[in-house]
Length: 186
Image (cartoon, rainbow, N blue to C red; front, side):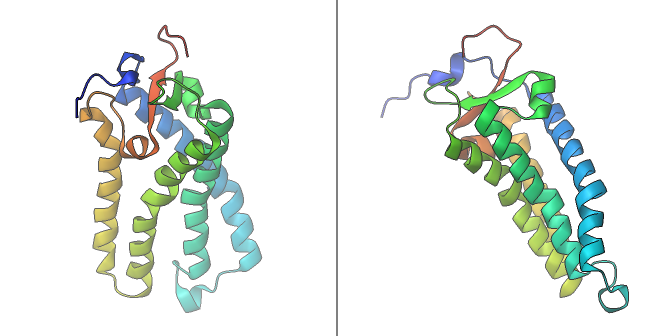
């Protein structure tokens, strides 16, 4: 099977630093909003029995998952589906597009799939071992840190990936991140 140049190689692919900064902006926006608004409201309505469960009660764990995984998923899926970029990517000047056909706007299901991998998929392992670590046996917390290291590697993958500089979620979704400040015709 011949392997020629990939169609997306000619796009102005975003650098890792730009992508990381956009991700930090997005995480900051969603987590601040989630922990400032959603977390207190949910905990006030559910209530937490600290004597029974301690600081890591079941409502606290589930609310943390909602704030750290579910809200970012919804935030990213909606914005990628409508505009091809999140607020953080907009601030930095980045856009998520299809790798093939190169530069095309994301279809709805591709945007949802990419956001699901990036937010729900990456966080499931971390939260599974957090839950097991605080509810069953504290040794499982070690595996939570291993899962977190795996998530970090999934993002860092874009540093050495060639030729498209894709993170793991980009590879599975068939997307690339491009620099809108560079001259190109989307």
